[in-house]
Amino acid sequence: MSLLGSRSQQVFAVGVSHHTVPVELLERLAFSGGAGARVMGEVASHDAIDEVVLLSTCNRTELYLVVTDCLEAERVALATLCLEAGVAPTELRLQPLWDADGVRHLFRVAAGLESMVVGETEIQGQVRRAYKLALLEGVSGPITGRLFRGALEAGKRVRRATGSVPSPPSVASIAVELGARSLGGLVGRRALIIGTGENAELTGRSLSARGARVTLVANRRRGHAETLARSLGGRAVGFDELRPQLARADLAFGCTASPRQVLAADDLARVMEQRRGRPLLLIDTAVPRDIDPAARDLAQISLYDIDDLKRAVDESAPLHPAGLERADRILEHEVARLMAWLAGLEATPAISALREHADRAVQVILREHEPFWESPSAHDRERLRLVAHAVVNRLLHEPTMRLKHASGNGSSRADVQALMELFGVAAPGRVQRPRQQIGRPLEAPGASVPPAAVSDDL
Image 1 (cartoon, rainbow, N blue to C red):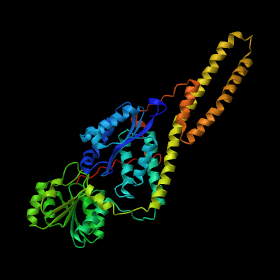
Image 2 (image 1 turned 45 degrees about the vertical axis):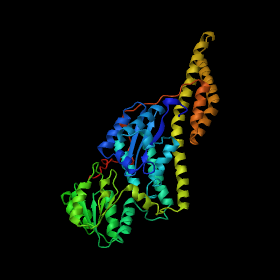
Image 3 (image 1 turned 30 degrees about the vertical axis):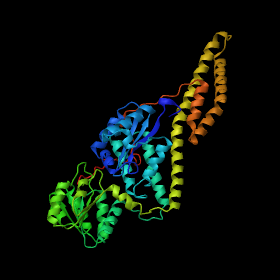
Image 4 (image 1 turned 120 degrees about the horizontal axis):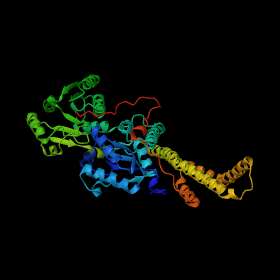
């Protein structure tokens, strides 16, 4: 907990990922568009929480908060996630991360080091979009702004330093590799992709590069699907053609961001009747899942989801151990920089409060002794005032310099607390700002902020 108590702001991170929960739980906490905005608004409505950013991807859902009451903020965050998932905290295996631990975790996430495929690059855009959505919803602030800018910069530095891997794999490429191994190759195979978002595009390009014939199934964004299909040498069809296309395909990929299941087991049972015993390979990379898990029980269907892909991912090594060591050193440096900045936020108002305290003491002493002065002139009064302030400045110079030095090293909290207690000064209060005014975009000042990306359902 903060050494300055509930009036001090702290960074707090909590959530779930593919490391901690199976896909059955992860999909219950997948938020896109309006759902993510709703969750952030609910969390931000509590007085203990000043700033909120929700990062929700296929592999993780995490809240990054700036809080002033540690216990209350932790209770709110954990209760919100558990309520949304409909489970107890012990089932989610949530691990709250405070201050440097929370900062370090976000930086590792942005660098791709916590991804299912270590070194993948899609997470960079997902982190950026998560902050932009919080900004547009008015629940971000100066600390989360600095935190997420730092995370994106740290991720870029890691990628530059570990450039020995020119093209890191992605979940999409791993999924396609799994399909190729299962079918003994993809040249000439009919591949169906359900969805038109980023994951669908990556999957399509990987399939096309391996010689597969690609068909995209789109419900919305039909124009985008047709453009993408042409670039892949394939074609795009409407959702009403999904079943006939499945009857002819060799393999299909679920790649939507739909909150609802796209393919039920009953639908697939009817498709298999049309296939007359010909096997069908299904690979579901979506969270929430596009394909009913019950389809595993159908004859001649092989179904893989995100949990199954983890085993395939273990066989890839996108970063050499030496590259991981370089990445860790870079991230530790960036974490220390941000923590020093946070520490400075506490040291500066503390120094101001201390000097105001000293100035008030000077004024009180001068007033108390004024009756004992014998006909002082205005010049004498001014000299006494200057001497008194000079003594105060001389006494406070060393503590002030030490506090500023400590803040530069990221270790000022204990020093601030000790100084406040030593001089009997109350810790400075925080200044509340209207939420819609405290956000700041990731781009340079004056740049416009585009609408938050909304994932395509199909």
